[in-house]
Length: 146
Image 1 (tube, rainbow, N blue to C red):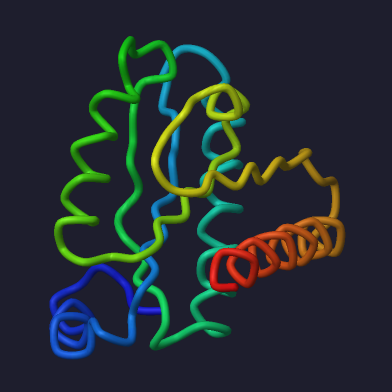
Image 2: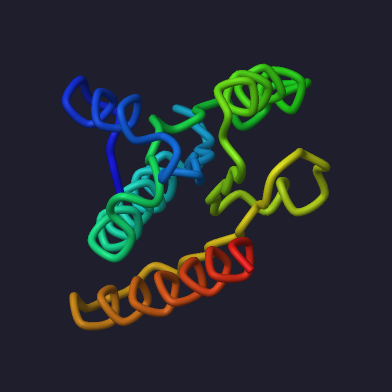
């Protein structure tokens, strides 16, 4: 997976005929409610995307997260501009990863994969939870590419 930095974006532009999938994490931010939980969810999302990077380098582009306030109205309309830009840039597939249940009711162009996490007491439990979610995302990607 290529990341959103100057080096990897250059590779993407030179080889975008092979890189057909854009991955965008969707992440809610709220500095009043559930701050620690939001940090935990983001930390796990980073772990998932790093693992996906190792598996699918050269096929997908990881974009910066689409960050929004958890109580923001019309967040889907703002996301639509991102979607238009990527499809105009010739992306064939867009995969959104989120731990926010609200996205399960939203209709967006692209595929939304819900990646829930429960707070884990041990590092072993955390690694196992991440492994399960990586497999879920991998299955989603393979389904998109069929």
